[in-house]
Image (cartoon, rainbow, N blue to C red):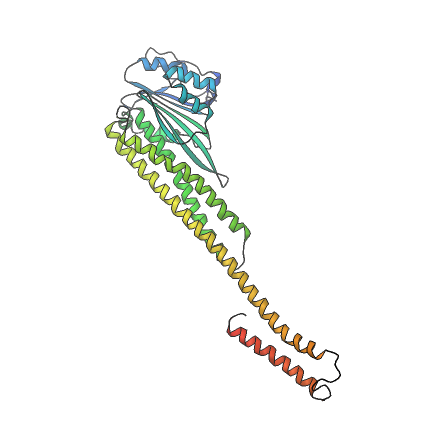
Length: 346
């Protein structure tokens, strides 16, 4: 909901409109001058009045808006029907679409929620005099990006395209702590892999991490193409002086994508090492069991041989036969044990 302590600053010849019911989904609606100066918060109904004035632009931030709110913004900014439909239904792939003199950008967002990786989506409408961000699912507020822009009015004077850069840079920068968190967890899991005891939870977590990183890579990798297009194309919306900033965002996305690919390879290697160690441990156990079975087989063979009910058998009538048989059994067992010990079966 709108905060009651927010001061609605009137524009020149523009009405000071109060927020309506559907503005519970409006996070921010702020007007700026083209020199980067913040004019103030405005109501949605005041957008058209702002745009009638020269040298102004509007930045609107929405969170999970309904169809009525998007229709209102479509009326104010003359947004394309297909773009508005995508923004309402969400669950779109990362992409960039040009509709006349405006752009529609979709990017995936990610956030760690209670130790689990959750994904969201942000749709961005960019025009010469407006920027509209629509957040769905797991994503952080873009208020820090807005404050950063307002603290550098000389850069915000480049217009809504600089605000677009700030939002994309903020989205990419929020991916870095996630990658760092996964890297630290992988280092901890490596210690568990080489522990003396096998832990089933370690294998499960390795698999979950590999699945999450694959999903994260599917979200991050297409962003490279989107930002590359912003660097190379759309000169009417992206000033030449601003392309260096988008190249910096591209570099950050590339680094995140490379880090994700490297961790996926490390996870695959960790899973293989873990399985190899489990197999090795099982082989060691089987070797010990086989050794004990061999030592038990020798006395079993001898005692079963002399346990047959034949009348005439060698040494049965000799008084020394029984002690000799016991000695032979012990000697055979010791010989087998020493042999297997040298072979490192024990």
